[in-house]
Image 1 (cartoon, rainbow, N blue to C red):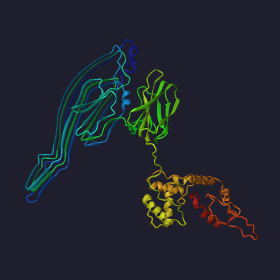
Image 2 (image 1 turned 135 degrees about the horizontal axis):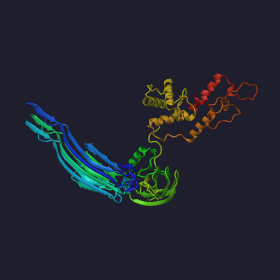
Image 3 (image 1 turned 45 degrees about the vertical axis):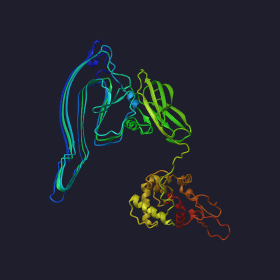
Length: 632
């Protein structure tokens, strides 16, 4: 309930009155009676095996029984933000539970700010009775044998956990870790001001927010009486034992038995003007992991990514925008020029503040660098002062990593603070960037780890390397589901299959040349795509500058009128011999020398445009295979 926003001693429109001296008064009386009956049983035991002559063998599986009771009663949450989080993992758990970092909790309010002439009366009465029994049985087995008997039992583990949180006013932020088995972990990077203690029900981590108080106004009168009566009866049992085997040879092997019961009662809580978090993590087995506040240096900020996506932000890896009570639409980003570099090196950083909301005052950027060990190694600050609406400020600077810089991950965090025009504080924003510094002289790996499959030019009607054609046929069968015979011959079925591959990946193969029809030629872009698919889309199969230039020239020629394109390929005795491959310029002897019959020694070149169609086609087919684009 947000009952008090907008109410003051001089205005009470909410009540429909006009008396300046009117007060707002709240009277509540709450009574709750809760009764729960819970029975959970898991049984793989109590088996019987008899044999008069042979073996009597019993082998049971595991039995796991997990029960939980959760009661919430008489919660009064007024002008407050709150999160109640309950998690139960059946059996063992491997992995960390990641919570927001310490800076997040510094922004939360620790309690209400109640004005003058206010009265708060709270009377709480709670009666809670918990009857919980857990049983784990792997024993109580009997093996009777005339020759030999064996009994091998599994592990038995039973735990009952009872948690009562009652009659609190302004409860702290708390995280409860309740592990039935062994916790092979710890609380990591606990926020400043929080405490960690071992309670009868598990680990209790509690603290308070460090942000500004907010909430009610003057003249607030509240009187509440809460009665809570809770009765919980629970039985949880897991049995793999209780077996009987009788024979010439008798053996009993049982599985593990795990029984876990958790009872949680949260009653008579009064929270006013506060940010409250109550979380319980139950693990009904062993836990190999940490309760971790914020990512460690070098780890990705998973929660930041999720927060940004949920808030409609982009997919940028380094942008965060925390929304508070009075937050504006401000986007803070931080980016480095590299993600990995060997020392010594100079790394340029860019901080951008994009104010898409109201005017701001006293804007300050604080920038802090943390080394691989998590310790702060330097900081700097920029005082931006006022920022207008829709104003963007960009800050660029360079950090010099010396040759003796310790290798590892360096985390650079920028935070923004300030106020609005009404002197209302801005919710603190953070953006961070992580780079890895490699030891001096270490060379970063480049190029693909997978060797290219196709390395030669394959074309129809030409002499191709059989081994390369066989590799192509095998690739098309495996990757594209073709049914080609692996013959090493670039035959019609193989060409048709290659054409289908080119059309499938036309954007990568044909479009760069400016065409849309398959060519049947395994040239630059086709080779690149085949090798990329073969190596599971691994990068590194980039075209050379010469290849890109050839593609660019062809595409430029293709855009010209046909007459110009063909005349550009006229050949004759007096034409300069080509020195490089081009759309219509082939290295000798690929260019056919065709001349008109003459009786004198002055032989004149004949333009291809004037040749018979059959001769022109033959020339085109011999000249064009250098570029898959021309097979149209």
